[in-house]
Length: 287
Image: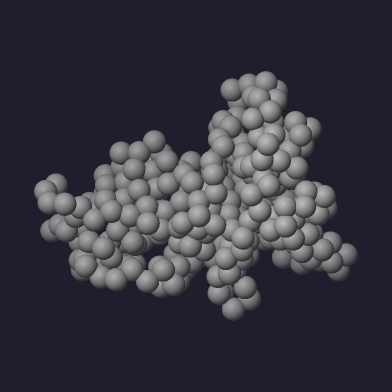
């Protein structure tokens, strides 16, 4: 590869955060980075820690082609640090970084709103797409518009990443299509408490959002060990814990002054069976 490449990156993300199913997500400062060169044919080289299986579709390539068209081949180099199949928005980050690097390589302007539409379509739902493109704590409204929310600095972030994978198709397949009215009312109440608690820093309000009957209950039956991890985090002193996206990772909020202590307690109880990561919130999406 010759010449100066065009570069882009997009962050990991944790969607749902409990009751915010398919509409709320948080960007995490763990990135998929892509470099792009003009070429005579499409080619992708993965050099990062996490790489797609040989038989699977390549999300970076799909994002680039969506942005510039298949008739403009590029060479792409991918340095991905977002765990795959772990509920951390790896595909959304790959689509977003691939599309942005491709646009820059072709000398085209990068419109985040258009990149969001491409990523949302490729991803199949908008929450991770919004966090990957815009960063921060994001809410996608009923009109598919992205609203940035200001998260309180009262909380620290911890992510528990089990060694096994759980792909979205399997995790989503167990979520029922219909719910009884009490479950819906509980979910609405929890969602309101979740947003209020995250933005105000009132930990009692955030704690009242714990639990979810729309997707977490059925997914916990599928993978009970994820529910056990949530319990471990709360026992260790976390303020709040929830499935990260479709799992199996768990997103944990601590008091910012107690993150180190919670991590130390979890390290002691979990041993090496679960990777413990403490990423800051990614205030920026595609860069």
